[in-house]
Length: 397
Ligand code: ATP
Ligand code: MG
Image (cartoon, rainbow, N blue to C red; front, side):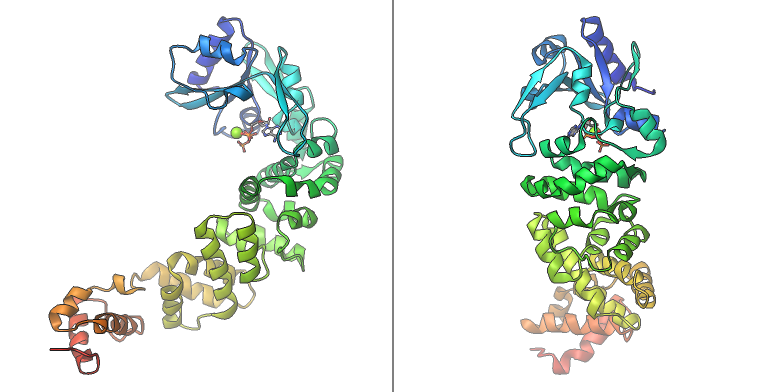
């Protein structure tokens, strides 16, 4: 276990003060999988007040102190240290009604969601694996700690977390856990849309998203009634074939632009996603460019990013490969898609004698000439072309 020095120092400090301290959760899971953990979470027998005392000389983040978490700022980033705790009562299917600080790590591990997430390690004590998490890692299995239906009734978000871990690592879901995911899916409607959207994004962008979701159309439909459930298995196959970019993966879940807009709005998706995903879906179903000028016009209308998403969607359709390649080629090799990309600007046209709305009209006419390859996008060529436009462009001088 390659615990970073900064983390090890914090563990030693707490241990020397008499508080048993362990690295726990995702960092242990990822280390055992041979991956580099993206952060190290610690848990400790020290109560929050004890931590404040032990680390009194350091910069701390105490926003989570009511739940037992203190963040210690180190050279290697913030390390979260949480007092051993249990949780009680989940009236809203998401948050514990109360937390209790406890002395034994065993009680803390019981509240964790999956066996692979419920292992702890400390240099002084070795690996603590109460629920067979290491075996489940070897077998590639997501399994609840304890009784699955109870765990999902407590916190329905765990259903999506489980699917996210399965999709990320290419794991299967244990039969009892899977059955409980289906049975408890209705409780997901009690979870905040922000959390649902974050988990959904984590699932769909994971390498095995499609293979995982193939069996969970019903679960996903609870959070996204607009889901394209027809031909679900081929949809899922497309997910795993597609690039792992969020807008592309999200777009694949919906039958059309209107459903995507409604579904993503329902989940509180950010504005950029709310625009690009439906726009790309709409374009992919109605505007397949047949040649380079067509591809340029599509990029000009949609913007580079949405055009790229559109190309990825077209590529996944049996008849879309040629159009996708055209868009890609133009995106890679060309830069002029809007009037602001032109090698001259409105002020050049004012100098030439254009005025008022004629300036904008002339810029658009020049853009059309460039996109149709009738004029190169160079200053001299555009000034010459602009002079040629003068007779019918309302030039005032
Ligand atoms: P990631 O790599 O996605 O960060 P992680 O396992 O570190 O994975 P976190 O959300 O950071 O996940 O949570 C840290 C640990 O806290 C988990 O490993 C798990 O033990 C526990 N945990 C987090 N969320 C829940 C939950 N909703 N229910 C039970 N235990 C949870
Ligand atoms: Mg984490």
